[in-house]
Length: 304
Image (cartoon, rainbow, N blue to C red; front, side, top):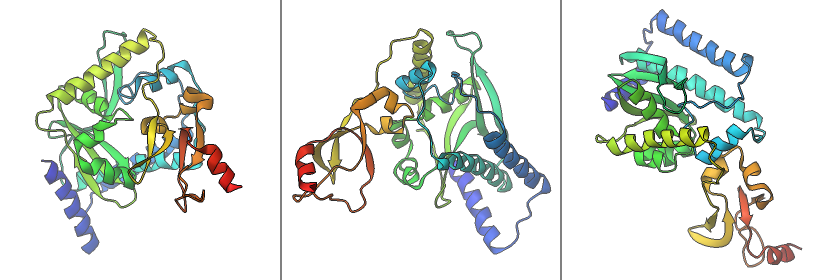
């Protein structure tokens, strides 16, 4: 079924390159409404910054959720962050158009669901993207790097370091509706490539882990469990060799609260890897969050 969904979309797009495709006016109008909704959400609606426990985020690292709940200040985001959110909404609208136009039967879309929880009366709320053939799918837009090094590598690669809580999010949606989790329909924002990342046929273990993590995080938040950082810093590698430096784990690097969490223990520096003359090994070094720089004084002396 997964292959059929993608094959239908690919066939439609190839056909559209060669000759006009008879899209119904209803589909075109719906796409237009979805785009309007996305623009209104991103520009006209006041962003709710209050902390809420939702299916879309409860699978994130507990320490990040605790920082959110405490009201810790988020890092200021650059202008392109807003564009990324707009791209994500637009890609979701385009994907829904392609699914329907290519002949895939959509059982339901953008459905709000509420899951009973023993930890709070209001329940756990969420909105899933689409149900196809009795399975719940989430639509994701991805950078070129994430598409090639994460989503294209399969389910295990996606959930290995689940920074954004995708696994719990998907299984919560599906289990609440007594459905199977179909996986993620993913679009590469740079190239337009698509893939569908499906869980293994026997996903009992993954489902149990995902739901348990959500319950554990809810319990910890409701009981105000003391804050504890979930990740340590790690040894830096350059071309598979240790440099002697230490940097933030990639999960911490993505977190909006890392400066509050780590304080003056971290510095944002161009990659601190030098040759014997004290010159950077990389011509255009990327910046990383460092917790320790080995031979700092030695390198500084050579730069002088």
